[in-house]
Amino acid sequence: MSDLRNEQPNETLDVLGRVCPYPLVLTKKKLEKLPSGTLLKVLCDAPASAEDSIPKYANKEGHSFDSVKVEDKGHWELYIKKK
Image (cartoon, rainbow, N blue to C red; front, side, top):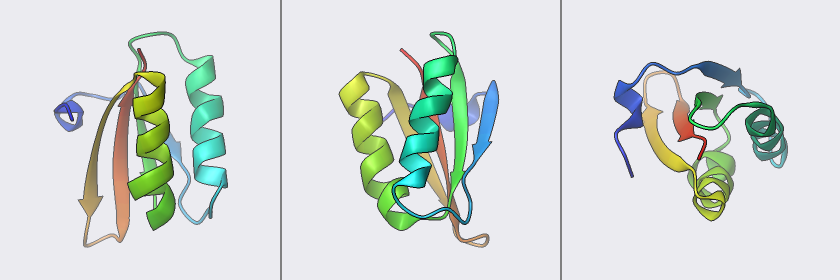
């Protein structure tokens, strides 16, 4: 894990309220459109997506990944820097 949460994201994707597999599908589609080196912040409240499918996808594709759970808001902030 890198410390991407301290960087200013270039784009934000809000998938709050979406259930699997939509957070992953929407994240993939967004990343495909972005240039290399772009930092995407994903707001996600689906535990399976935030803790499993999106991190696995990012690692498989070689993107840098970081996440933080925002306890008081009940969601995660996922940071993905496109390779």
